[in-house]
Length: 236
Image 1 (spheres, rainbow, N blue to C red):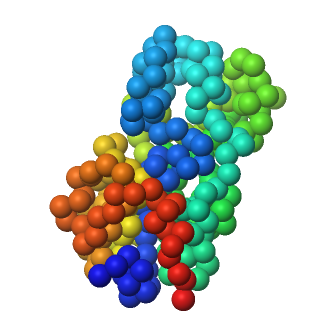
Image 2 (cartoon, rainbow, N blue to C red):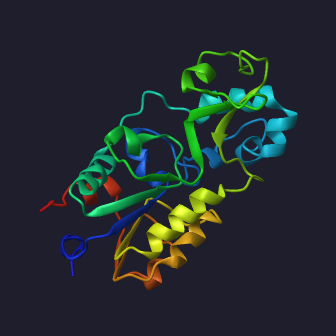
């Protein structure tokens, strides 16, 4: 059975995606040969984006964060757009993403679970006020709130826990789906990757350039870019 046939035969599709969804928008992933984790910095990127490093070396954290984690000019690609179209047509019930770039919403998706947060939300650690991305990008050092508190990106750093409400939403969506499409993720980051075990529906599809741990259980595995696969889907 083809991907098109599976989509036609489904009414509650959930998409679970990772960094590979946004690479076609010019945002580098973390784990490929040219990804962030294979480039050289004064500190390893995994160390820099940890909670403890943020606390101890906040200015250095922000220097890396602005340079390598924020891509304000990135635009949604064919994958983001097709997923938004599938949701609008009533076929896709939810997008669950490990990305923090906000491109799914920019493409028009409404029901999006951002497991690792978003660069577009930033909050004061003192008063709780939220600030837009521009507050971070327009500051050359550590961004501060008008109350004097330090502003932190609302993203999940290493050593931090995923939000309970996001996990609950993701589990509910995946467990009630009749089709789960896993795309652009190596399924190497936990606990996010473990959420797919709650799927008990009809069709499990994996679209990724490299093998994943879900391949052996999938009804269809496609080793291609997400955009090139999804843009061919016709919405009835």
